[in-house]
Amino acid sequence: MPVGIEFIKFILRRITMKKYFRFGFGVCLAVGLLIAFTVCASSPNPRVIVYDENVPDEQLATLFIRPVNIENIRFNGRNVNWATNLGNGTNVKIPAGNHTIIFDAYFDTGRGNLRSRDVELNFDAIAGRNYSIFLIFTLQPQQIHSWITESSQSREPNDDEQLLLINFTRGWTGAGIFFVLNKGTENARIITPELSGISRFIVPKGEHTIDIELNVANDGYPLVPEVEPHRTFTVYNEPVRYILSTRLDGRGDNTRRLYSFIRE
Figure 1 (cartoon, rainbow, N blue to C red):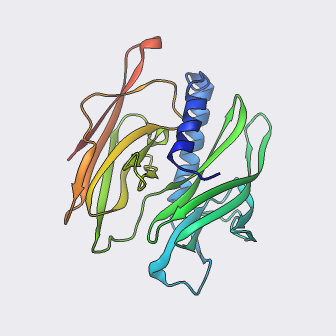
Figure 2: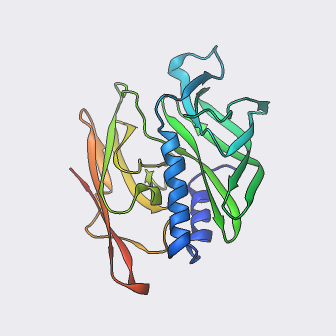
């Protein structure tokens, strides 16, 4: 099943309608997992593997494989040894284009072991972009959720590209949200922010939109803009910079999570 915007929406509708993450253990569990696994995607000095030595560098994308929770990986039908519990994970240089990755995912939940076999993710890799496998589990129901997301990039933009910088300055950890670039178009992209500080993404020059969505680690509070978000931006010769902050407002069932997302 292709993993795209509609699939992510389906997961969000199924899980965020539940009350499991509203208080206490559920919140700590979900956010704690996301902290652990998102940090892995930006760990320093992961080992590097080139999947096909015959593909030129300018036609390669990067797929980050976390050092834990994934095993028995098959990439485009081929068994690969990418998940070996090495401390900082593995950056795999893969050709641009459509790919299928199948793997087994596992977690020690603290209440027993949870395993999902033959998880299949399909994705289109664009040359020069960074991708990672995003994993989280829920206890009610016991289920592992996974998708491919773009992660913060360290390379420099090409002549027809520029930087999009998002500075998360205050409030709830970035583990609870993701961004959708160009939502509702064939060029839509799901990108995951760093947990704090500045997230760095590369976008083509031109006009874009950006929206904030909750992921499965949300605590049940609705996400409401405190000021009208700056959804549309045009990028040319200078980086585009955003500031994101969040705060809780209200009490009990009337609690909501206000956010500000504005251009610098």
